[in-house]
Length: 128
Image (cartoon, rainbow, N blue to C red; front, top):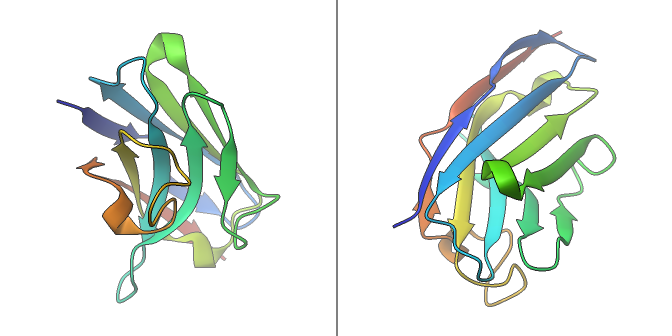
């Protein structure tokens, strides 16, 4: 059973940076797609970055490309999201997600339906 736990959220001023962490358990040596989603009040949950554990391939939504970096420390069982040049539109609850499949399979990597494991989320608030 895969379990995910996010941390690292907080409040920051526009232009600042934050690094989110997603500690995982139960991720085996197989192929997993791990991703970061976010959901702002009144909006749909959207995928912002994804990481293929077998190939190390990364995927980014256009809204964060060039500002966010997703990475994974396999030894620490941790997925990271380095967020730079934050703006108020980045304010949201950020969720870590995982599925035992390739990121490009089926509806992935930006569909919520692609993932069957989710963390509880960590809040990011960016003030102007």
